[in-house]
Length: 397
Ligand SMILES: Cc1cc2nc3c(=O)[nH]c(=O)nc-3n(C[C@H](O)[C@H](O)[C@H](O)COP(=O)(O)OP(=O)(O)OC[C@H]3O[C@@H](n4cnc5c(N)ncnc54)[C@H](O)[C@@H]3O)c2cc1C
Image: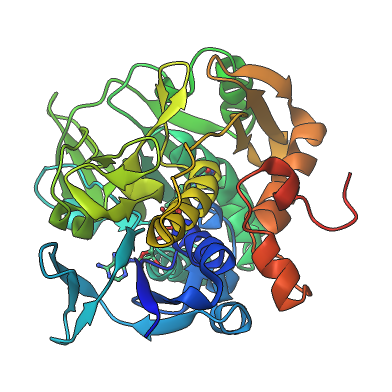
């Protein structure tokens, strides 16, 4: 009987782990993905209009690659029995496990935080879109949308909102409404560093996004935020973009964690305290070289996934693991009508902004993060290689 290589989580890391495992293990292992739904949610795009279109059906791709899909919510892990338990009660045995359960947004620990919208999942992004649609339909004389969290996602959402209203049929409301970006930090994009900040600040001014920085939130209601200084901000929609932590299933893996709940893995992405278990994507923290740890980002998840799947399969075959590496680090932030800003390196040097940056952002959002289409099963699986050359689309230079 072939060995069982099980992957929990069908996001960016889990999908590429499955293909890489299939490529390396061939017929010597059955590769299965357990996830809540066979949809790859395009989380990096959930600030955009039409969130209902931002998912990819994984069944044809996994099917073509010979990977089994099991719908289920994993709620338990027995490391000594090598079994994963699903909410349905079903138990699935494994010879090697890859945990790729990703991340969830961390809501602020204050009363009423659950009442606010978010764009962490496709369903939540759709719920926000419906709220915006209701506002467009009602077309009040004034409206306010408050975005809490002036990091990567909050900036992108705030700068997209006027055009979101236009896409929903009320461009005039989009122009006249007030948009407020709130953060406890004293600057926007505090984690993005100083390099891109002037470009971001200029874009926020151009888009007439009001800032409320250094804010200490005490509570939320459905339409208001109360601050520690006694003031209140009312809004027609309040959206949280307050950062991510590892999704709860990662807590089942024994070992040391960082402040985001991510498991600290070794260089081959193995859980040091559970040798048959590899952890990847947003659920793991790994060294990327130069004293930098991976970020909860799509670009890291895509590569971490490939390495975890490859190494889990190599381990089954008795081969040594490959040390995870990721040479290049870029960030590309959508600035709405002001284009986009692309930075390179951990010191985030601005390489492109404006229209040039926007063209790159569009390519990232519509091509780079999507599984390739129109390839034969063999070519699709080959795309799961860990070397940059393996991941280049056919014909690209
Ligand atoms: C709004 C937003 C904007 C972002 N923008 C960017 C960006 O511009 N650039 C960038 O690089 N990154 C961005 N990110 C981060 C990026 O989306 C994540 O880093 C990436 O999705 C991580 O991939 P992953 O496969 O590790 O996890 P995920 O994409 O979170 O996938 C995890 C999968 O596992 C499933 N799962 C979780 N728990 C269980 C369980 N117990 N049982 C079964 N299935 C389970 C989930 O349903 C999901 O399908 C953004 C994220 C958000 C939310």
